[in-house]
Length: 166
Image (cartoon, rainbow, N blue to C red; front, side, top):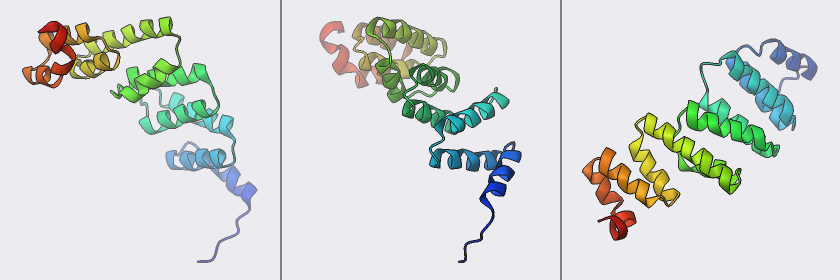
């Protein structure tokens, strides 16, 4: 197949003029990333997310997260991780672990307690079990299992509570 030779400047201007279209915006963002214009890619992603403020695109948010990490932008990495966990409500311990690594120990305890409260308020008791195990909060695991979970869950987590709470 023969490659067509369009003027690059005009192509770039076309993309910029039509970035309101989601697919064109994706092309533009990929182009900025490939040219190592990370700050420009972040700016475009943020414009898109703010334009659609009620609709958080997981794909865009995760890309934004990767770009913030690439730039070593701790503040915005934390903010975006919180968006993933609280607003998009992705129940994945890997994001919680990433968040934990960005905090000092005493700050983490406060944030962890907020996460626990969030999951309790949203009736995410099964996910809370995983978080309690990850954080080695075995008494809280026991209480959650006893008060909020199906009996099958007790069997699944028996090894964590058996010695101290049975």
